Length: 331
Ligand code: GLV
Picture 1 (tube, protein in one colour):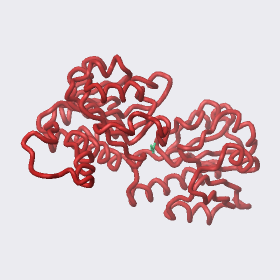
Picture 2: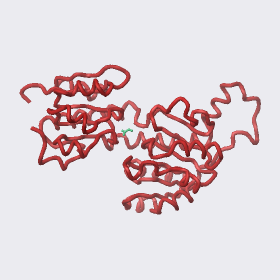
Picture 3: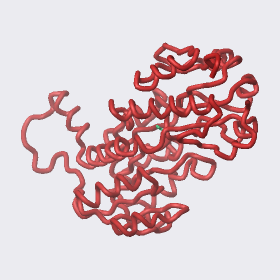
Picture 4: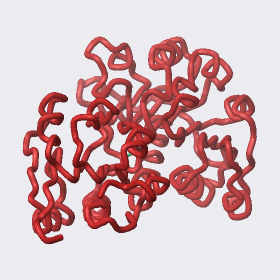
């Protein structure tokens, strides 16, 4: 790289990656707490060869059309539903993401939501703060047991498997999963069994979503699916909000169709102020923080920087979403 390539970074990232980017590139870093508005993003990338994007930045074909020099988009996330990948490939733009390094942190968060929702921890906290705790109550705050129950995983990829291992090893749970592919490793190591979605809904005490968001999975958990679940079931989502029909979920939680939900993701993010979920006692809402640990975010930043630099040099990206672009990469 004779001249330092021009890049735009849509938010301040951990130093572990940002320092390298700033050293190797002519980097314009958006330092606000909120993402750059669409028109600013369009203007910022007009002459840039590289873009570091977040899941809050929508990259569609129209935007790509305004960035004729762009060679690489490095997404600071494992999910990339914010990017129109086929359009990038068509235009010769590489896309990178950050898989692997956030698997454990995300599985931990899914488990954290699972046990907190099952045992009504946040509700109890609010009860205590409100001064309602008067005495020990034999019939108060009753939740659900974990030991020996059935965990249903929708999408047995890296994160689903990591959660299933925790629940099998620590709580002796039976593991069922639904997926378009079978995951032999999970079947061999923890006795997971692949079933259809209907069976998974009917048999799971805890149902945890780990599917990609795409046209086939959007809204996959709606009123009809919630009706099939147990009244004692807990639904967990650390993947993407639009996998669930949120109105249907609020109704199911209100009517006792299912017991509770633990969500790290919503649709939209943050949820609208008048979203009924915000007023229900049996849902826990975390602000999309599953990968938010110091080490995980450092590791994500490093992969993100490496993807960006590889894309600018014309090398293979360490975590390459669209390797099929190889033959027609922009020079
Ligand atoms: C976070 O949601 C991610 O996709 O990394």
